[in-house]
Length: 371
Image 1 (cartoon, helix red, strand yellow):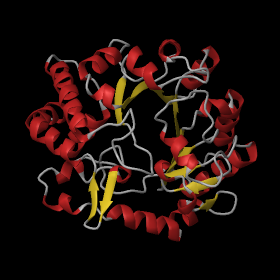
Image 2 (cartoon, rainbow, N blue to C red; image 1 turned 30 degrees about the vertical axis):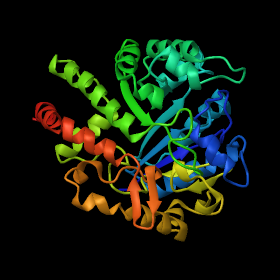
Image 3 (cartoon, rainbow, N blue to C red; image 1 turned 180 degrees about the horizontal axis):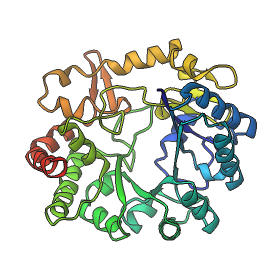
């Protein structure tokens, strides 16, 4: 029984927002073609057909839509995609969907569609209006917090399973209480805290929004205290990083490749059908080929994929002697910095500081939740 996950970019890097820290804008600037435009119906059908042929009867296909802003492909694109996938679905196969959006294009029709088709929906909200609007602007330069919050209300009313994704900038990291209160007051939603990425080229920590290891460590500890306080009071708030820590402590697999200790958890599909091994590496040198010309099995076994996996398997040497290695597992390769001595996770000190502080209570929490 086979499974495959596609991270699909139906609108490439096109976006109705102008987030100053956008990592995909930076990725696009480092390849020959900045934008692949909108995904056509033929490319979408080829992608669906390739996925279904790979998983076969009883398998599982997961389609996660990101961007840019994926809703710019239009609601009709998504309706057609779901209908085509249902038609091509092998007997007993499972299909699931997710989408990550800034919420700016959502309305009642979008919310109804996402709810009816059980799309797990990630909505980008950076903690508070002030923190969010500082870097998450629209094309006219205005803030976007209020529109995103209105979209969340639409999703909640339509019964959509929505989680909130918060990018942790240096500003946000210095205000963990503000971030936690700003998100939790919006209702009961799962939370994801994503460290803000520095540009591919250039030194770390130099952008106005950059996140330093020191600030990240303090943020993790601050958020953990708030999270654990809720847990002790009998209220569980799902925070993806903490969830994965608990899963690892309980002997279960984590939900992210960053904490799995290996790359290769999915295939990224650009709007033109180009396939890549990772959302962070949708670059010319990492192109595996095009879904129009190859099968999923061929993409997974391609020399470029083998090289990418080998690079990701070369974990930082410090991990082998670190007491927290079984939990951190080297982190995401995109956060590695390289020297003649080999790779090192830029946030290594942050994770060491956090686990030294939180591990006893994490063990207690794992015992409570998985007993």
